[in-house]
Image 1 (cartoon, one colour):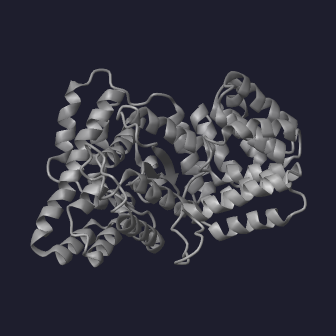
Image 2 (spheres, rainbow, N blue to C red):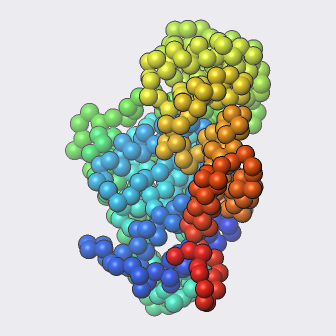
Image 3 (cartoon, helix red, strand yellow):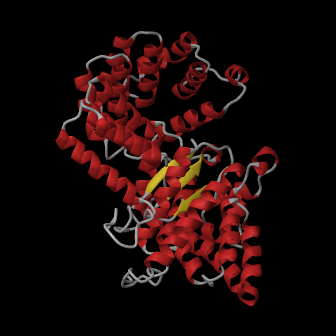
Length: 484
């Protein structure tokens, strides 16, 4: 089910979804050939799902909802890919990301975009519980529940769809059901049953994914049970159950499937613990109180304690909290990257690079290490040739990360490569939904005497691609068109 995380963001996401949904429906109905074996391909073609998913993701980036920490990104995509590879879905590329919100929720957007609120991740007790939520959201996408909901309704009732989607985006299932009743009259019950049936169907498919991935299905049921019985502060932030209602016997049905598992996994690595540390430290308000409650008796608590000191810019105590555990675990990615950041902020740039180069020798293909080294080099204007060598291979990995695109643009500017800087900066603004600004960047570059005529032609083509990748511009009835 598609949901939204914060109350004041409903309007812009609702507008994006409805505009794109209706645009794709009315403009492509005559042009899309139904796909064999897909009963919903004429209602919501997969290529239109991609448009909706990417547009929604861009809006989330634009309003700073998405956590772009490369360690967080790498972990959720590791876990998501571990699960989605068992779906055998060759038509989609799944994208997993974390939303900066303490509300306990998760959501799936058509096109394979799956968001997990940091509040939900922090509430889980192990990786298997988190995997259960992700598997459920993958199931909604794979089973095409968005398209099914559209296909089963009267598309002529636009006001009904506004109400339904508004309810979903607001995290209010009751509002969606009320809209069904208002818009469809006697057929309302069938659609209410469809929502319930979709949740149960997604559970069943998710259980299969968990089984194939060897994650504990019992832990999936345990997490849903904990949410259902939550009280106090957790209950107040619990939006998940309003968008994924726990109908009778849902948890029991999941639990019954778990008896078939042997030696099921709760955690595949200790990454889960370090990621929870990162997300927790980012959202803690009373840092001093949290520091008093922690010690550095093991590497996990030392990591969290150091993160909290780092957050308040107390680099001396951050260094002290983590140093001994780093010395004993110099191969640990999380301790090493944090320790390098501390050293860099203490103006020990060479020390920071030594720490990072050590882990790069151990994990030569790790994108987070390469990005961390490049960032320190660029921020300190050191060995920019090597920084570019590190960043260029990461384009496909971080194409949806604005921090990467901005860093790449800064690098090219420092190296006086204004053409490459314009490419990266325009990609940065497009990702944030600032298309007009992206076009201004390209226009200014085309006017520059520092860029060759050949590269200006390439920029003209890029400008055209940006213009035509969204809703088509108004065109004259006669004469040449901007977009074919």
